[in-house]
Image (tube, rainbow, N blue to C red):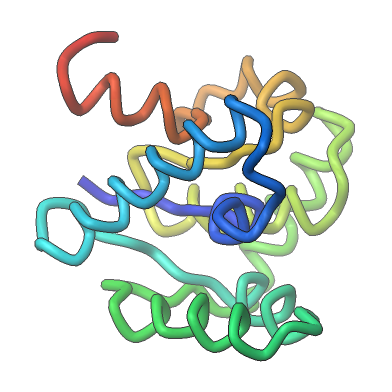
Amino acid sequence: MKIYLDNCCFNRPYDEQSYETIRLETEAKLSVQGKIRDGNISLVWSFILDFENNANPYDNQKESIAEWKQISCENVIAEIAVLERARDIATIYQVKPKDAIHIASAIFAHCDYFVTTDRLLLKKVSSLREIRTINPIDFIQILEGKL
């Protein structure tokens, strides 16, 4: 199984953890990363993850997230086909260009799931047929056979 975690997902552990949903998403995301480290799930990386992570002002967070590029099984580069599909996704689903590039990268890499903690993005692309978009909590429930 191949998955793509967007930048929101990678940064969830660094968000304010006093909200229960954020804390649960953090725990689920860390569990997913454990499964990636164990080799049970393959992670896909992309040029847009590099771009967004490089803009992170917190060096320790930036370095911690960048380590996942080395663990990933594939790195999607900025190809015309990815950017054209991203443009279509942004137009059709009314999502931000960077979000569309993340999704297009996951589609281009033939990922089974696109995992994000961005609720608005999940709502906007819920009818997307090319890839299953999901939050980390629901993804863990799928892995456990509960969804």
